[in-house]
Image 1 (cartoon, one colour):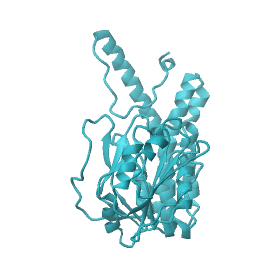
Image 2 (cartoon, helix red, strand yellow):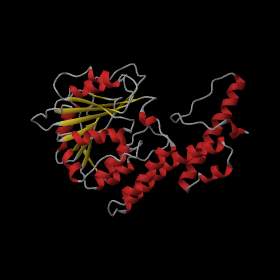
Image 3 (tube, rainbow, N blue to C red):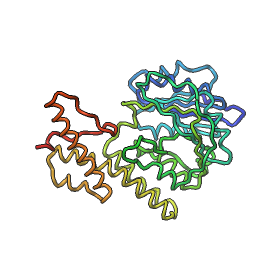
Image 4 (cartoon, rainbow, N blue to C red):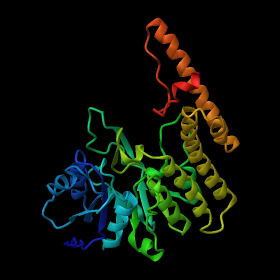
Length: 342
């Protein structure tokens, strides 16, 4: 393997963890290669069985910045990113999801925002995979960065009912490599969901200074088959339980403890809903009752059950009248088995 030659200015390493990303990896890599200040690009293929590696390699501009490595087995994005972190010589590191891409000038704009910050992030520009238009330029670059502390970051990752997903855990900051190495920070490879949240929260708990700017040019694609949209009950359980580890890192303020409790309850609500679906399918009343782990979780479950009952009743009326069934106002979620109506 040939290491990239760092640029003389403050170099940035872009890390792209990819799994079966043949359709989008080329766009991601090309957008990184076009950025001023990027000295290294590591594409870590997580044992794909498509043409991800060949597609990424075809984007190489011959400048010696692009390195493509293949994991011997599928180990998840945390392990892929840790491999790149162990190899980089750049001053900054930045994650780019294989589905997403940078607009021209994003890295330079973030470096200009950095100041004394250890992590400098920007709000995402979201677009759907099915959107007919491709975003090619930044329409609202103005605005100053604001400070994000541990409490604000954790609170910003709590899902809120009826609102689009805007959790801060999705941000992709530039992070000072020196800070990570000084504190021995790497991704928790046990996590396949929320590994970014845990990583950035741990950095903040260790004293990192984070700033968040208005959009600087990270375009996040919302895709039905993206890795963040597929997770198991065990993935949710590990994400919920990671808050206990964060709470043990240092003495916390009352607000910080409350933020962690709210985040854990939010994740637990999603977990218990999945477990309730399984219990209903199995007609296991005891297991269904066991999912009411707290008042907050119980309130969430009751609301979801009421929603399901409403959708079913309206669906029956629609079937009788010949009209289409209305769609739920929330994003698509697992539906309860027909046995709930029996």
